[in-house]
Length: 111
Length: 112
Image (cartoon, rainbow over all chains, first blue to last red; front, side, top):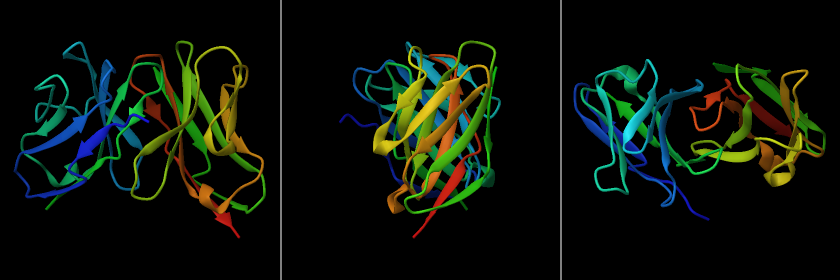
């Protein structure tokens, strides 16, 4: 069964550093998403991406966040200057039909 | 805009008993409804989804959910709980190829 692959599974970074979270969506999917889940809290929408551009973003997705499809297969989330409150599990998802497939997540710990 | 309310952050059932996890939604457009399951330290796995058509939806692992428009509900059930069902369950709603809005989750404990 096709999978959404996320790397790394766990990343520790110092506050103020830039991080790039990587995702390989399912190959024939057209819609891509990032969500995050702070420990013990609900899953929150960050951004959706379609046709090589952002289609919707939440208020969480401020100027320190950016997304890219650098080579037509990978889908990355960059956080420019991490803060302690960015510590969370970040999920990538892709979809072709209603109801997308999530990756297993990257746990980001900012120290 | 869409929102989801999951009643009960923790639910405990005995092994073999009925599982009932409650979800009510609010949506300004015809909703697409989902249940996801999350095992500890893992990602989100789609259990089932309702888009259109039959209101009783069957999913994986013996779970099913019924869409009741009049009650704005999409409760998840399983006739007989198994120890392996212990996980966190998220109800979610979307308006199509839009963002999915998740509920706060219900942790299911299965007592032997």
